[in-house]
Image 1 (spheres, rainbow, N blue to C red):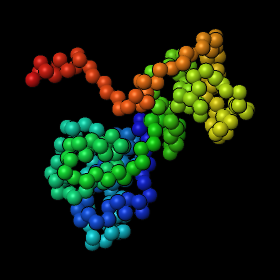
Image 2 (cartoon, rainbow, N blue to C red):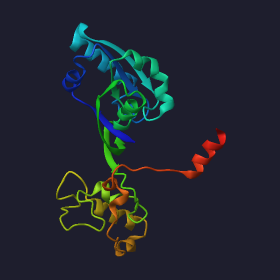
Image 3 (spheres, rainbow, N blue to C red):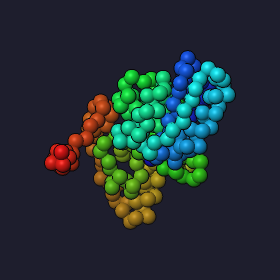
Length: 225
């Protein structure tokens, strides 16, 4: 899931200052799961802003299932229309989705979108994927060296790990030690003898904004129309 955390209240207060009508809009998926943008967080933040800004501002609250799809954003069209600004508690995609659907309204990001991660334990999330566009997890025992190695090495380890931990971030285990252990467990350690060739990073963000088009799905939509 996409992991995000709320910006400091003072930063949000500064962004919201000057607007008279504000809609605090949560998102019912990823940011709800990581306790940053669900119904509870919307309510708490709205209460804090009312206290901080007093009579300066009228605040409305709402949560949609997903801020990244038009059909859900359309459900709050009237509330958005009443607002001078929308304070989004969705990820960066949600913030931009609101802006594209309602270009006349100012959209404020209430969260810092951080990474795509896994819930290690209650209240602990760690990055697992950088969406590089060319997945090699089948070669690395299901452990991503792009996201989990501090140097994103495709062939490792680098020679710097100490007691199985990263030389750059000693609090983190070395991704390539984890990969070795996993492949040993699976009886596939010989996999490490295959050198992963130099990668073409065009599939990653290095090539600019990415787009996926599924012609089969497009044909189905056009037939229905």
